[in-house]
Length: 344
Image (tube, rainbow, N blue to C red; front, side):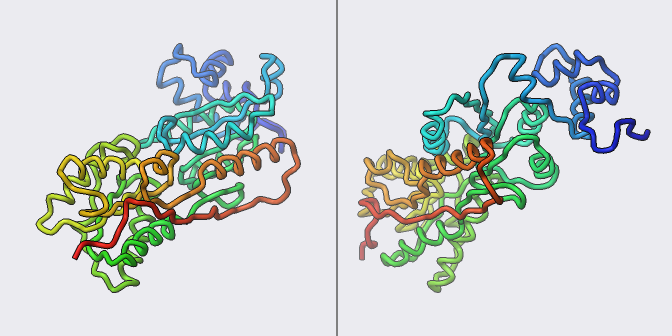
């Protein structure tokens, strides 16, 4: 059926209602996340919203509700220590602004449906999306989103992006252990669906190859716990137990996150092993707690990264930002007491 709207005009809530064959009040309920809509009707309305590329008028809604400007942060986990560090930077950037901060917890295993529903509602003035691959339909919708969008921890052509080179970070950590004399180095990885899993494995393998150390698949393990995509203390302890049960355990372990390293360290201690005398451990993130635990770690400067991305989002919101930016954030290895050369 031909689109009856004038060329170039924006779709309205009336167009969505007509396309979905429902009342305007039903579209409003879907946009506001009401439970008073059947799942089949909700799906039909959301399909019409996507087909028409409809976005609610935020300014009109804000005036009607007498609300302040709102900035949303969408992220895989609101409780992971990694994201807590990033959020501290976001909070500091918003401290002096009259802006509401909204959190959208997407979940680490199946985040896209939640993100899609959140975008369909379109109820924010700006969006900071953390650690989510942006491609396909999600990329198209974000590029057409009628509000500023900034990515932190991923990249997409056409959107302001701040990202880390996870391959290089993992290569740094592994090369450091090789430089200390370790040749049998375990990797505590995350689950396969994590955005960081494959690049950090690639960096680990690259460092081994560059040093002429043969890759051993038995030394790459993940824990069973699925929480936070495997970036958890529980998963770190489970993976470390598997490594220490090998006929020839590693003399050093690179954990793909600091929290995994915490679990690995606890497991080693419970088995009577001393860190770093019996096994060296390197983490990834350089969380604040790691400084007190004396954990060697790859620093991503998360607090500064959170501030930088948020300041860019605010500049977009204020209309003071110019061309799109794509910024590779710095990485560094912080050496502490959890690593040492292997015993003879």
